Amino acid sequence: MEKLRLGIVGCGGFSHYHLDGWKKIKEVEISAICGHKNIDKLNKVADKYNIQKRYFDYSEMFKKENLDFIDIISPAPSHKDIIISASEYGIKNILCEKPLSESIAEAKEIVNICENSNIKLTVFQNFRGYPWYLKIKELIDQKKINNVFYASIIHRSSLLNSFDLFSGRSFLKNAESAILNSDKLVIAELALHFFDILRFLFGEPRSIYCKARNVIKDSKGEDVSTTIVGFKDLDALIEVSWCSIGEDIGQRVLIEGTDSTLLLDDEGDGAKLKYYLQKNTTFKYRPIFDHPATRPILLDLDSVDYFNKGIYMLEKSFVESVIKGTAAMPTGRDNLKTMEMVSAAYKSSKENKVILFDN
Image (cartoon, one colour):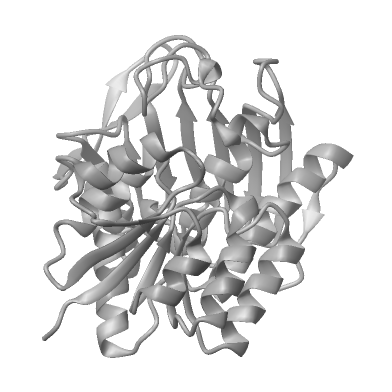
């Protein structure tokens, strides 16, 4: 079988993670890449991944290259115009970085454009490929944890305060960072992933209440948010901070059912999911009353290089969908539900009220 021809749009810091994944997929040939006006950045990325055909105009790339699909890794405000151009040149398979758009109205426009042009659109929600979320999903589906009544995902880091994961220097000193000039920051860029994970695990929410603020004043958007998401029989807490000083615990995940509990203390290589079963409960003596204590079962996870594996898994799934003519998740239409949660979180924070969803 001939290799699928891939076009890349965007050569910023995150493009390296996408390209590392594509290089591992034997069915794909990276045919061309389009950057912006920084020729040095474009050439640096293209040289690293041995991409010979380089463009500053994505429409020109779509016109000249016979592409089977494209991967959009540019900032959200550019997505709509890129997708419109792709549709005009007959490209039928698009993988697009999240957030799909800065507004829910434009996100709906993008999805409608793709559906009207018979374009298969998939949104880059790579957290679904993280090993702990896959294992939690498996245990829920297998009824190994039942009657879940509480869930929390907590991410606290100093990403905006002192250290930049991508460049090894202060994110705030990166003048080219489009993300810091947006009015929407940590909810749209990170909490969005966790909203998507809640939907992946538990289905559609009924309500949302959010408080957000800007602590590091050099950025325009919010850098701290606390959100409570209500489901039929479950309340979920999503805490996100990019300006916390201390141990960077990344993602701490807690899922509580009436018969068992799942706890991820820390993400990273060698991470283990703690599985607490009611039958393993003993009692420790305390004054006045005995205190129940449950001994956990440690569930091994294939978590080595989990971040890149999550990206690879999504890209691999997308390629398989192109070959087989099926849909890869999350589709653009499905992702609109996550975008609605993001929009509602901002509305809730601004108006200080609970937002109800009409499901």
